[in-house]
Length: 251
Ligand code: PEP
Image (cartoon, rainbow, N blue to C red; front, side):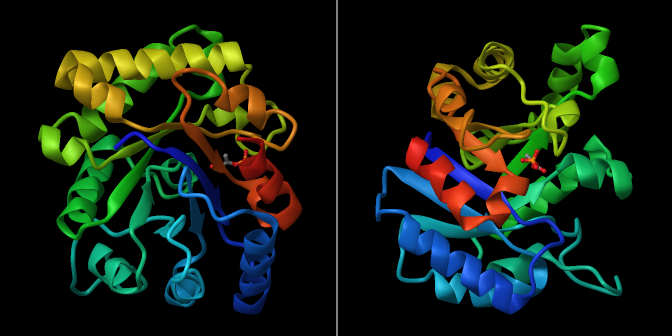
C-alpha cells in the first residue's frame, strides 16, 4: 500500500544502550501519527530489543539492514530472513549501495534476497540508484531500470505490492550532495512509469518510493512535497534524534 514513510538506517552505528536512548528521544520528539510510518533499521543484534521498545507504537516499525538469501544452514556469521522475522522486524533493506559495493551484491543475488524476505512475511525496502559516472554519462535512468527489472520484476503482482522502493543516487549517499527535488522527482516518476508498464496503474500508484541521499531537516520538506516521492530513507541524519525527528515532523 502506498504510504508516507520515513525510515532511518543506522548502518554500523550505536551500541544497544545508545540505540535505546536514541529511540526514546525520537519517540518523545514525534507525535503519534499513523499518517506517516516511521521505520528504524538498527544493526541485527539490536533488532529484537528495539522491536520490543517500539511495540506500543503502531506508527513505528523495525527493519533489518540486510538478510541472507538462504533460509538456514552452514553460513557462519549470516542472518536469515526467518530469524529477522522472529525478532519482530517487519521490513528488510535489500540492495543498499554499501552492500552492492562492499559485499559485491548483484541484482541476481538481490532478487533471491527479495524472494526469501517475502516468503518470511518481511516487506523488502529495495534500494536502487545510479553512481556518479552513470549520472554524468546521462545513463542514470537505464541504470535504475536495470536494477528494478532484474531485482524485482520477476515478482507476482501480489508480491510486488509488498515492496517499498528507495531511490538512492549513490553520489548523494553520505556526501552532503542531495539530488534536487526536480532531479529526484524525475527519477521517481520514471520508476513509477516503469512499474505501471509492468504491473499496471493500480500497483504503480500503490507503491511507496522513498528518496535517500543526504536528506536532512532543511531539504526533506521540499523533497517530500514532490508528487512521486513518498518519504525518505535516511542515513546520517537518523543517528541524531533532533535531526531525524525534524525530518519526520517536516512531512
Ligand atoms: C543511506 O545510506 O541510505 C543514506 C541515505 O545515507 P545518508 O542519508 O547519510 O546520505
